[in-house]
Image (cartoon, rainbow, N blue to C red; front, side, top):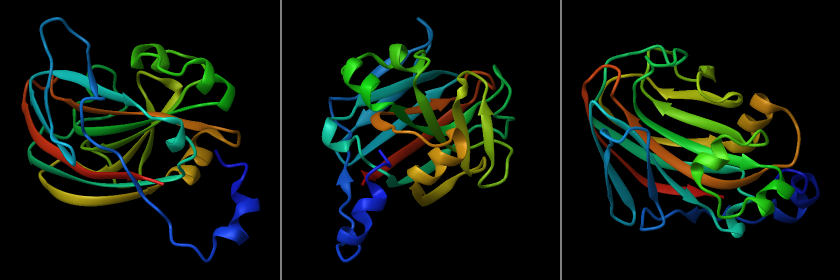
Length: 213
């Protein structure tokens, strides 16, 4: 993802950055973690609503190859009702209002696993995942080890627990480098979750205006 940045910098410096919108459409599929518990996602093109009632699940979509070179992203999210503050480092006690996952693979692996399920990707040793979170008992900007992904995933706190709306802009290339070091990486997929099962509470939230570039 990053190996062409230096060579292209001079050519692109005078050009405006072009954001590629990511639609919340039928390409998103839900991955349940329990037969008896799942969130409800309302996909509506430019936005998605998330309703969680003491439940947790993941919505995932693969990205086409023209998105694989993305190095930044932006979106807005809103929480009308959320879970209490939790320690996001604790497996089984890490409820959060919203989490947006950016899934990366080395270029060769990206081609080999094109179209793979999110479960297969998240358990692949080569995968690296940046998880941006709204929720938890941590300061903004905290970078935490993932209790589920081990060294393959990092949680980055953008908002603590509570309600309200915010717009986010993240530097994927910088955050990836800080979390995992140098190396080629393709942004092959995105995932979204709400998590309220450990605290048996409710989430009413939404994400809109997701763009990567």
